[in-house]
Image (cartoon, rainbow, N blue to C red):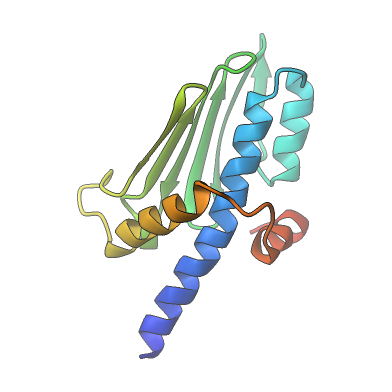
Length: 144
């Protein structure tokens, strides 16, 4: 029973992190008024370090919690944000562009059951996202 409780806690924490994190990134990358150097600064505030800025293009990949986060920003409202599950959530993948969002639970050769659960929980909460969670606030202030 303890293992089931840990999986539920992990799923809940991941959703409470992932929904506001994704929403924050999408809002940042969709901004029509923010300069590229400000976007890079805001990415650092989200613990996404190592972003390179060249000729108005921002490119970065980071490991955040149990996720790989990749961003390619090539100008105002022209970006690709990819968030992939690692380990427990292998197979979970969010791809967001300025045209929309796609969420998959089978983007790995052997996706985990947790990937399927995370996809459902993410979509249930992302449609009408809560603005902020304690999990996300803790991440913003402490990282990891």
